[in-house]
Figure (cartoon, rainbow, N blue to C red):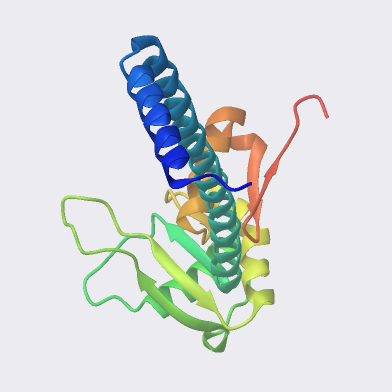
Length: 200
């Protein structure tokens, strides 16, 4: 049998009285507060975990992309070398200087057609020594011929040095590896850093 309107009103009054009594009870309010707090904390924790996982994934993807970009940049430099210590002169002809260096000091027959571009790096600063030179060869073979003969510069009176043209990231890694393992135990081939293991 359905409840009468009067019975429903009586029930509402009883429920209201019970609720008012409960909310006058400090321990009840404290328990409710704890439940609400824990629920909120859990939701916040879940959101933070989701965001943290997302951030870590994005960091990993970013590192992978950086490595790929660095590898691509290094590949574009595979025909390049850098020369340090070649005296800088006003109105110099760098092509002629480089060809003479290759012929006279390295014993390598490089022709003008083998050089795509050559220029000094950085701005002129008279207070500093000669700026390094970067050379882009038209072919990989010419670059390799020069790199294979660069050890002949050790007998050269001038303090000349030839190196690979490395990206900033690769260069920093190369220098750090040299510092850790010693200059003589570290070298570079086409942007790949090689280390001689002691005792091997």
